[in-house]
Image (spheres, rainbow, N blue to C red):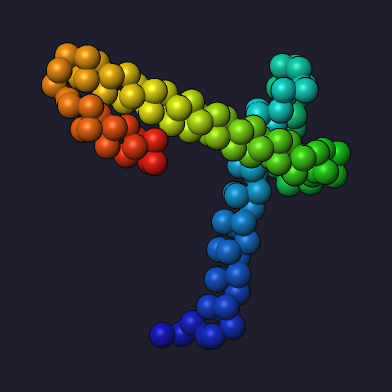
Length: 127
């Protein structure tokens, strides 16, 4: 066991930095391909630059387009939340309307008494 504590620390640091670098590289590539403002040729150019000269390419990308990365991410998150809220709103509204229509149909068929219908309707509207 001839592996001093300092070497363990340095190895751990290098592994951590390598993983951090991979996350940064994938984050840059994901931002690059999600950006609608860039043309296909610009995306291809940035991709080649980042893959051929990875360190320089990522650092230049961060300097040139880093500020907008956060803005684009916020817009994507806000759009995703708005889409989710819209789906939930339409699903909840459609679900209640369908349940009420089903209750009316059961009442008209004679399967529910008016008292049962009113209780079921109150439950649906309360939910």
